[in-house]
Image (cartoon, rainbow, N blue to C red; front, side, top):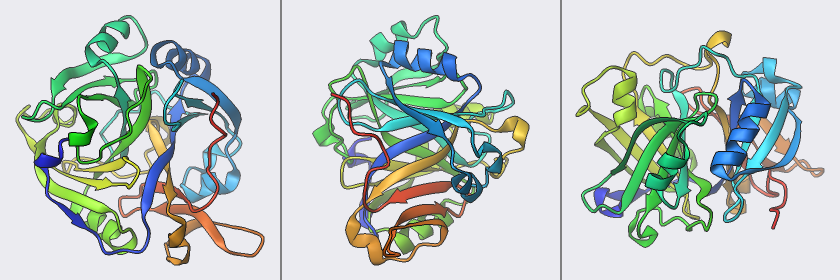
Length: 314
C-alpha cells in the first residue's frame, strides 16, 4: 500500500514491534503442502518438530499438543518462516471468522506467477490488480493447499510505500504483512495503542474484494482497514469484518488457516507488561517473550531476545 494513501500516527506505547518471524498454519496433508510450497513458491523445509503442550494450551488449541510441524522458508532473501502443523479440517472457510486471515508475500511478477500456479493446489481468486491510483502495488489473491489465503504482492518501488519493505531476490519472497479480521477494529487499535509504540495508519474505508466476496457483498463495498507498521518493513493489517463473522477458536471441524503469528520485539521493551497467556523466562526469571491473546481472541507470540527460527540456510 502506498504511503500517500494513509495518514499515520505514532502510538504512545511501550514496546516496538520489529518484524514477523513466523506464521503458523494448519494443514490437512503435510506431504502435499510441502511439495506445493516447494514446487510453486520455491520454499524449502528447514526444520521439523512437534507442538509444545504449553503453547497449544496458551493459544486455546490443546488438541494440537504433540502434533508434528515443519518450517518452510524462502529460497533466499529475508527469512520469515511458515510453520505448517498437521491438523487442518475440511470445513475451514477463509475469512468467515475473526483472527488471522491472510499471509501477504512479496513476489517479483504476479502475472507470471498466476500462469505458473495453473494446475497446482493453489487456486486463483482475484487479480493481479493495482491497489492504488499511484499504481505502485500490484497484487493477486490465491488460496493455498489447505484453503489458507495468500496475498501475492509486487511493489514497483518499495521506497514509495508506507512500510518500505526490503525487496526479496526470490521470485516468491517472505511474509511482510499479516492480515487479521476484527469484529471491533476500534477495540483492536486500542490494544495496540496500550501496549505497542508502532505507527498506525487508518482506519480508512477500503475495498477488499476477497472479503466482500466471502460475505456475498457488492464488489464496491468498503471495509474499515488499519495498518500497524513495524520498524523493519513489516506490517499487520486489521480489517473490520462484517457482523456475520464468528469468533475464534472455531469448532474443530472448521479449524484451519493461520493460528498464530510470531513477532520480533525490540529488547528495550523487556520491562513492559503484557497480559501473558504464556510467559517465557530465562534462568534469572526475566521475561523473554511469550504468547498474548488479542481482544479478538487472536494469539500472537512475541520474542524479546533470541530468534524463534533456525539459522538461515545460505
